[in-house]
Each structure stands twice: as C-alpha cells, then as structure tokens.
Amino acid sequence: MWYNTKATEMLGIQYPILQGPFGGNLSSVELVATVSNAGGLGGYGAYTLSPQEIVEVDKQIKAATNKPYNINLWVSDSDAPGGTVSDEQYEQAKQLFKPYFDETGIALPEKPAPFKSRFENQLQAIIDIKPKVFSFMFGTLSADVLEQCRRLGIKTVGAATTVDEAVLLENSGVDMIIASGFEAGGHRPSFLASAESSITGTFVLLQLIKEKVKIPVIAAGGIANGKGVAAALALGASAAQIGTAFLATDESNALPIHKQILFSDAAKHTTLSRAFTGRLGRGVTSRIAKDMMYKETAFLPFPLQSTFMAPLRKAALEQEKWDMILFWGGQIAPILKYTKAKELMRSLIEETTTYFNDLKA
Ligand SMILES: Cc1cc2nc3c(=O)[nH]c(=O)nc-3n(C[C@H](O)[C@H](O)[C@H](O)COP(=O)(O)O)c2cc1C
Image (cartoon, rainbow, N blue to C red; front, side, top):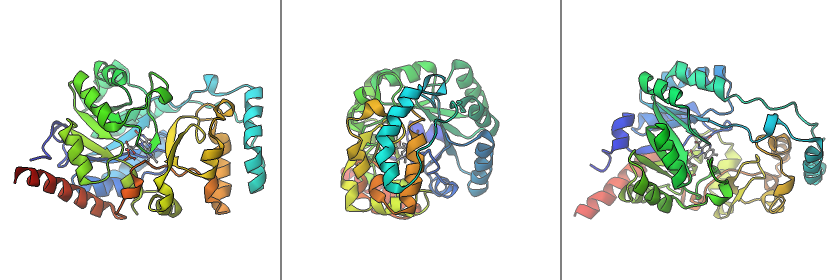
C-alpha cells in the first residue's frame, strides 16, 4: 500500500502525513491529537515556550492521544551577537517603524535587555519528556545529543533548504530530513547559506536531496491535498509534511481572522520577508509587507525585530487594521477547502488512495 513507507515504519504511524509544527503559539494540543489519532503525525512547535511550558504541553498531548507525535524546537534562536544591537542600529529601526506606531497611536518601545538563548534548557525538557519524534530547524544537534535521543527511542528530524544542509544533517546522524521548499508558509529554516540564496521549490529540492542522501526524506511546502501527497511520494518522499492547510483548520491556535484571511482572495499573494521577525518567512502579502520591501538594512536581527512587530501587531489587531499585520501562510493557500482537521486528514487519505488505485486500474 502507498502508505507503508520507511517513514511510517520508523515513526510508528499509519499514514505518511505529518502536520507541520507551528512556532509562535500557533500550535495546539487539539490539532496534534486530532492528526495523530487519525493515523498521521501531529506536531507542536515549542520554540517560544519555557521548559516548564513544554513539559505541561506534553502532559496535555499525552492525555489527548496515545499515538506518536512530534515536538519541534529551533536549534538556533538568535542572530544578534550577544543578543543585542548597537544604539545606532536600534535608532534606525525605530525611525523605520515610527510612522506605524504613530498610525496606531502607541509608544515606540525602548531597547530591550539582551536576548538570552533558551535552546539548551528547552532541549533538556525534550530529553525528559521523550516524545516519539523530535524535529528541529535552523541547524543540527551535537553527536552526543543525537546519540542520547537514539538511546531514548526519540526519532530526530532536521530541516533542509539546500542539498548541502541535507548532507550535513545526514552526516550529523539525524534519522530523517524535511526537504523544505520555498512555497512553504512560515520561516525558511536555512542554516548554511543565507535564506535568500536557498530558495528552491519543494519538488526540485526533494529530488536533489534524494540523489545525495540515504535516510528518509519528508517533503514540505505547497502540499495541501492527496494529489500533492501522491506527487511527493512519486518523487521519492517517504512522507509529506503539511502546514498551511492545517493552520487554517478550526483546531489550530491561529486567530479566527488569520484563518479567514487564509481562505480569502488575499491569500492569492504571499511575500517572503525578513520584516516580521528578522528571519526570512512567508506570509500573506499586506500593506506593511509591501512597505517594508527593500528596507532590510534597517531591520533588526532575529528575534529583536519582534520588539517592534509584536506591539504593532497587538495594536493593529485591537484596531482591526489587518493590512498592518503579517499573517503567516504558504503559496498553496488558495486551494484550501477544509476547516476541520479530521476532515482534512480523511480527504488527504482518501484522495491519495484514489490516486494510486486509479494508476493500477
Ligand atoms: C505559521 C507557521 C509556523 C511554522 N513554524 C514552524 C516551526 O516553529 N518549526 C518548524 O520546523 N516548522 C515550522 N513551520 C513549517 C511547517 O511546519 C511546514 O513545514 C510548512 O508549513 C509546510 O509548508 P506549507 O505551509 O506549504 O504546507 C511553520 C509554518 C507555518 C505556516
């Protein structure tokens, strides 16, 4: 059967369909459990959570499903040396953002205290809770940690945007690789070359990576229906990871307006930009996304750009100024149909099955 792949065998799931984890408080226990209970692999993006919060979320997931699930972290969570920027750099960003703060009538924020990486402590929480699957982006793990995960029965999955990243991930000893194409919603997980120079579509990237690595590869980016899953499998993927289509379902933690926008005509246009966090990511094109084009030199490095974007987003939401917000989403959004995660899973499975049965007929 089409659904018996190396990935399903290793992950202990029935169907090679992964719900992409969403960082930034957009994941939900309900979505993870719905997808895992339907035979796929639910994923929870935990990079903004404290270690205690990760433990708590894990308890809730375990209470909602006895099936395998994935917890996701960011291996690198800052691009600012020492977690800060110079006063001049901060002033420049302040000037860039001033018109938007004036428009929403809120005060410009003061320069924050240096950002401290949370990754090491978060990693310890993962080791303690031992999820069946631990996926991560923006790099790889040390040989020691990967060995520890192997001993504990945790399958490790790293994300690649280039062949070089995939080869590095394989050589480091991860169990599987996500081939993350530029169509995908959310951040580009590049970690060797710049994200801007690592822009390859999912189905090209998948084939290039398949030529060079032996471990299973999961296709991510631009897949939202059974035909997409079948296409990924036909090109050698061992599973498909689907983000935007699950983000739009009732079960995700995205705001109702975010879901509404993903199902609207506005989602026909998406933009890859560093404006929102300081790292390159794809979201639905808005006025602020357009305004910020070619102004990168004034942006702050990740995660400090959020010093401005987070309060602005909050005020814009309160004032219903949707064009001042970036709603994350991928290029495939215009074909989305389902608002229930269970229905989406059922349709993905049925459509892929039909596709492969028709080939045999
Ligand atoms: C809002 C949003 C947040 C995301 N956050 C993460 C994350 O924290 N970690 C991660 O590995 N992938 C993250 N992703 C990527 C997804 O897990 C998935 O690989 C991607 O969305 C697949 O492409 P698609 O959106 O075209 O389906 C995110 C995607 C979106 C849309």
